[in-house]
Length: 294
Image (cartoon, helix red, strand yellow):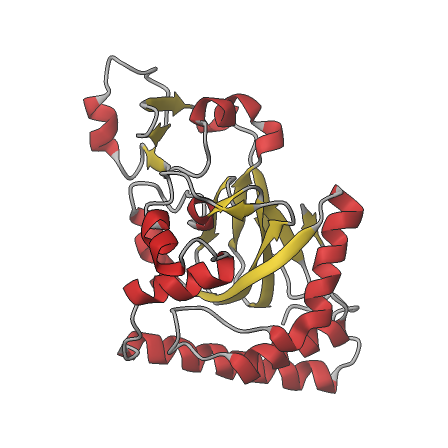
């Protein structure tokens, strides 16, 4: 799942330059067009096939900045950031994340994933991944555990809820197999299913990462009730639409809005840090090989 130095220094430089040239947060928030990094996206696709035997299609990409400020709301939320990705509701079939750090000066940051292959009973109990998942953690949602007192084990510290099938599943976190990618460096990559429960964590400094979304070649647009916009889309597209048409259709519900002051600050910080990173990589051709932190 976690591959160190997946990208060479020259590939990383190409990727970062592509981000700088195409980062336009005035479109849908955090989206970024990485068409100029086609060869690197193909390298990831080839890795899926060679390592996992899965043929995939690239569908979308996002960019995120993690700092104490941007991550504080997730850290204190009822779920502490644990979630599955919304793409699961749109696509019926396996979808994947390629999580790629392009800048990191933090000493405590990364991502945690609860892999399906190592937690089969959990995912079997949760059922259809195209339906929304709710997660509650004892530390940040004690009122939920107070309500459930006497109905769940006293040492349970997480509760997974699927309302579509009435599942309320209390677990002890220590009993789950959790893969942790800590302090990832530019050039590394983490790959996992979007339907696998995961979260980012962060305490200090800055982390900038890309999230590239892929779907299995045989996956299709989800036409089941779990995709609550599908019937409307079907009427809109007259039954002839695929994923790309669907994403254009959803823009009807996500109109462009001016960037907030916070959004402008985030954009400027990302561009400034990545431009400095480019200059450092160009000055030191063997920087990654020396395992230095950007």
